[in-house]
Length: 190
Picture 1 (tube, rainbow, N blue to C red):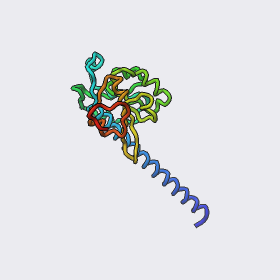
Picture 2: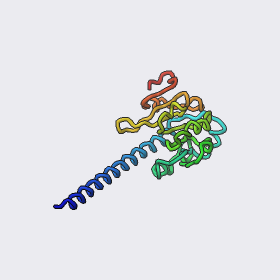
Picture 3: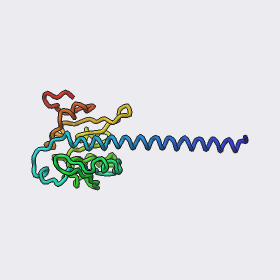
Picture 4: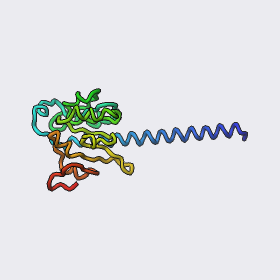
């Protein structure tokens, strides 16, 4: 076998390895966001909204995505024909956080980057559960942050931010959180 043939085979092997790595990475990413989509939907089962005009006037239980949508059709398929709080679950993609004021849950995409603080300010005090996988989300005033620990999706909770929006989280949800910041309700062990 000549040098040219050997180089072609080595190049082909390298290209094949790169393609395999890219496919494996894409599969991990899909499964990661499928898990996050399931969490987002299930968070709706464990959040309690204080009765208010804003909550009572909602026509649906809207799970809104602010910024780039990393879920694709996964979240839509998961929530199809589902209801939470007696209202149909709808997935809504938004361009600005101000549009999310009527949502039950607002997922703020990590694509928002430096705008996350401004996004959270636009929702502060509103009865909207804020969720993201952006680094430092809880420290900026977010309520639930997705974490990846040992290749598993987990989440952390900022109870002070939750209470600031007049929301409550069930003790079952708080117990399974990886970390909980803020004052934990009496009788709940995170």
